[in-house]
Image 1 (cartoon, helix red, strand yellow):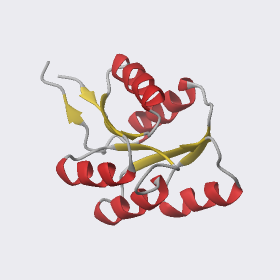
Image 2: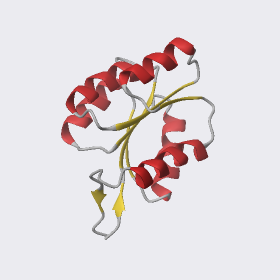
Image 3: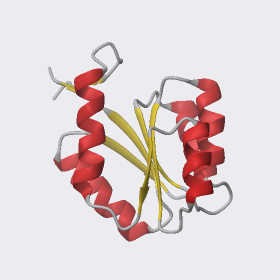
Image 4: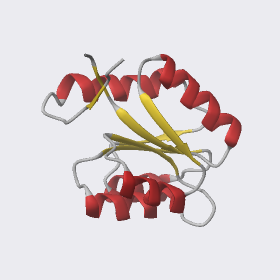
Length: 133
């Protein structure tokens, strides 16, 4: 059995969301894709995720607000926020909300992979989803 991170990806750009999901699943991660902040919070209520990857600007509820809500439920969940329009205020708000980083779009998938690798390496006590396959 191998341990894999369970990731909740919230991205309203369906093409980018699909690409990120496909790439990360190819790396062996479990990835659930939703398209707005409300869906992200609702999905989080049903599944214990290790990592959140959220766009800032999404319909119905932005990624930073969704992150704040989720962090009240599980303060130790790891989060990376990203945006094509993030200014210094957005980056500061993301970090205050509990994000480890705020990536500027377009970004290389390697940047996301590096964060995920650091979680696996530096947080051995984190509960990881177990693969039975």
